[in-house]
Image (cartoon, rainbow, N blue to C red; front, top):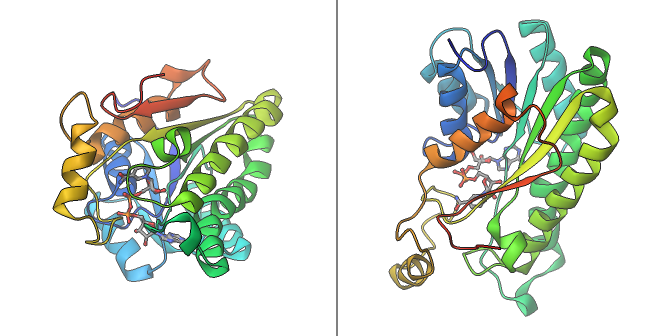
Length: 250
Ligand code: NAD
């Protein structure tokens, strides 16, 4: 028996083969969930969905565009009949110092991480409200809690801290409608988000600060997303769950 039998999920930014979204999609599918993988490139999204087995779909969606999110939600409802879960996972980062952040850097990072989370949530909330049920799982970061120190710059920390505030406010406002909202704060997980810009020295320094002595795996984050998306967490809302190997204990 799967923990998500008969349920459906949208996962944004889930086409990246080694990414947190794809690992989450795979685990959800293993637990009986039908998954819609949303990402910038249609071909890659479809490929990732096919990889999960039959009955899943891939759609092009730039989460910075509200119209894309609305269209994707409509397509998923048409295909699956309902949306139970949204994992707002799409994100980008940039390793900039405070004085090097230009307006376009700020816009790029805030738009995908924070505005994208707002947009995709707004696209499904009316549907979830109508069904008096729904789960929103938002990808924040340990960078929000400890002020960076992993890879992303201050604008990334600010965007991910914004995701925490948005998550908690949505949890409060949407609880009467049967909708739960929670955030995950991953620490250092080996994926492609650093786009080859992580030097061996940076990696060594990060690992030195992790009591468990290893980088996280995408599956470590997926397990947490499954918990927050399933009834195992039925009374959990507005929380931020750390998946960081002890790199921030607070
Ligand atoms: P990744 O780069 O492997 O995957 C991110 C995906 O988001 C990519 O497939 C990309 O195409 C997609 N994307 C980018 N802009 C988009 C847009 N406008 N619309 C839709 N999709 C878009 O990264 P990842 O490491 O799997 O990260 C997933 C999430 O986890 C991100 O929000 C990231 O900030 C967060 N996170 C990652 C780590 C880590 O160490 N890897 C740590 C903390 C938080």
